[in-house]
Length: 566
Image (cartoon, rainbow, N blue to C red; front, side):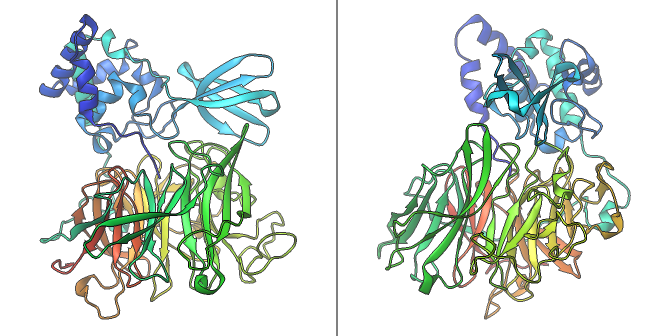
């Protein structure tokens, strides 16, 4: 998931319109770019002009070889207002993976740049002009991420007002190219909207202050009670409603002292044990940090006897492993129909997975893991299921916990309750967002492929065994996929939606329904829009689906009763 620092454009507009000569000058740039169309051909020349520095930091051909993000589909990914904000106030909305890394070494030197590569022994930073600095990890005293972008805040002031407007017009004109044949494979150019969209009813959050919720579901035992997880507060709460419909919140678990929190890090995943009513066990996933060490932890705790809160017994660390950067950590855990715990791990960064973590069977990064938490073995708090695919792999260093590999950032996965298929939403790099059905031992292709297109040949081996997604979304549809659930209902009350997979895009707020046969896309429709960015979906015990709004902290129940999927 990309937890971007989303700012309302009016927040920028207020200080720019305030008194002072500098602010009045900025207002001229702002007004012109917002109100005038501009000339994109002239803007292309400005992009290459050394005054703007754009071409020295950004590519526009999909290669992503600069220190900034590739802008080949900027007009699909960002609104005009977003583009203006990014140039005039670059530190306000730094894209995940492009923050400024600051390293202080043992000899009192300080280096700043974009994190390009991290290995066991060294870190590589890149700066303007493609200058690279390789730093040995043993020489690092302190490493941090600055909230200030490497991109200077006054770049627009180097241009004339009309030149700035033309530059914005050029950036807005950059669209993802239409690649011949992709639409037939599962990358539709256009997605139809159904005639009558689904309804979203706010059920929690109108009277409660949820901060960055990332997980929601009904309590497995206590009727009409729900659990919500707040990422940055490292807080798990029990939610109920009074007879008059008043929302009530009580603490189930609060562990801020155990969880490391940044914009992309915190308490990310949660799962009840299938036998929770008897053993009271539940699990969660979060980041930790100690000095320069970053890690991911799968923790276990037990609930109180009445199952309404945590028992107070200390956390048991089921699994912990090091990660290279502060992003792409996955964050989803689910118990499968086989009773095993499945764990989603991102490639760990930096952008583009330069070391090929997702293809490396000696790394947990870029994988779906599967472990048995009901049995301890070999000094670990878990055992390896006997039918895990890499137990007898000829590569002896292959980690036996791996269930599937070749994923970039699996953000929310779930099992179809009827077919047992494992559906995974995988957040893309530059061009495509993916929805996959994942099976044991499979290679999903990252970073060799992104969607159906070749991304890099650096770690390319036997491509015949790479599994392609059911669908890859173009940038015109979305920029950060949120995986959801397959609709299954005992009485088929959802009718035409029975067996349809529901997912969404975090940034565009579009909600889609997907129909597939044998992992081939048969039909996709946009079935609605959410008032908030959907960070995750949730289920109640009747398998009704809920959308979790990240910014406003509202939980919406999805109503399919008056909508037809056709």
